[in-house]
Length: 575
Image (cartoon, rainbow, N blue to C red; front, side, top):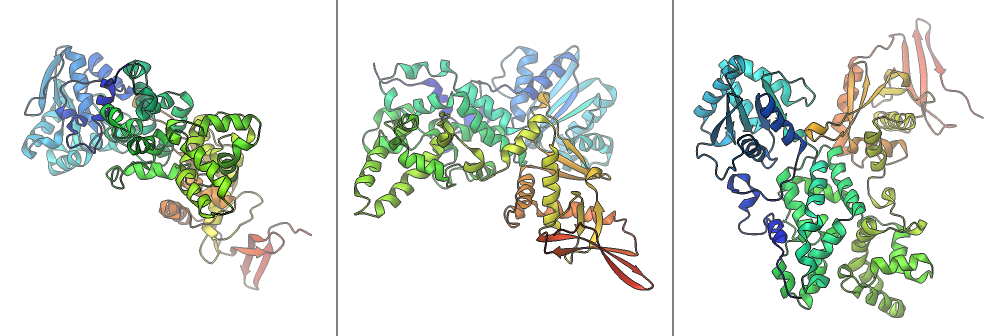
């Protein structure tokens, strides 16, 4: 056997932003496309342009793949590989007797050219003599439309579709906003595509395969269980309305896969270099622990990913298993050896050596235990989380105890089942009551009390008045459901993962300051709308008052009339 270079590793390496030249990330500089990640929205647009050519505008952030879709449409409809874009940024093709003008990037055109093309698009919509495929930044597009009064009709059609993913699309102009696509759908496709065995055949014949952390990462990332757990993190980004562009996903997942290493780095590594490479294991790369501090600073979604790091949260059962699981003498000892024995990512058994040293010297050197915990515990928690397969109670990955978001699984299950269980509904209402009152509130009928800071009740909303809707997924647009909608009298509260977690924590005795910065504006807006629709009677005051028996604040009514006032306890008395 000899040292071999895997061309697929070179392909993934092009997404390494630590390189001086990573222009291949950008479609504008790409002459050929390798390992295309298929998307349903790409297929939807191609099929529409092929069967019934219609004007289409694709919007989204830089890196969302707008230009790549334009390229795919061109090549699919013409059967010709697009080697280079026209310097003017506009290509013309004919399909079914109709001319299609493809503008790969609106922001590259001069303002006067943009205005001319938009006027021409508006006329094309009316006359149906030609159609457009335009890739445009939303801000640039709307600014150009607002500037020109002649484009009022086009402006109305465009803006009605931009903000609402479910808005009906007029026959002659469809808007596809890639900000509405779900990162988790693409992340899973990339993981699956990149870790197909056909891409790694070269590594199986390489002399260095046993000490290659890149090949080790592949062998773990190809496992379905690992893919599911990683993708669940990206699913959590969807559910908290955090969008990662396709470019950002490629950059981040390339780092997860190879850790900025190349085949040459693996071949040349010895001694300390091998030890450093062992730290480039996928579960460290995913959360950036093996990268420089500023490596991912330009990827906003990356900071959100770190919130779901299982290595940062102490779990007594898991931690005890990591340090003592090999002493049990049962099946858990075998599992401990599989996970933490002589592997590349345990630095070829170095963890076991340090563990044995600690056990023999801990009475004489108290610092050994602290050093062992600091150096190994977070890393091995992550390994345990992604790779534990044992059915033993002590070694079951428990997401509610290893991830800081205790109610994440409940929320994702709601989105999957497309329904909110009544028990969850009552908990969310209880959470809203705790937030509005800033006190522990007891409501036996699960009614919502809309109160001010003095606990004066503006409005009582009975539990049966609420309507609960779960967002629907849209496969054709690569959209996974990401929120619940709570509605009463036409007033809506959109509940994403962050708000769900916050309200469920409050309902279960959590502290009100945790996550409050992420949700306060949303809840306060909902509360203000409920207050504006207040229908309280003038002669009845309703308040929340502390009840010692309940150890909570309960509803009281004060009737005000000409003879004074009368306070009525509306809650049952308890002995």
